[in-house]
Image (spheres, helix red, strand yellow):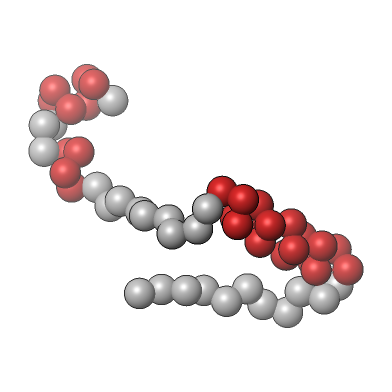
Length: 51
């Protein structure tokens, strides 16, 4: 990464950043719930939240 930034110094600012608004524990709980639903055959869809 350091070499890339030396060759193309503006590269770092061109990227897209993601900000997560859920806690680690909240994410783990959500993934556990969806995994349980999937393996029980009850997973219909996972809603996508976008702003």
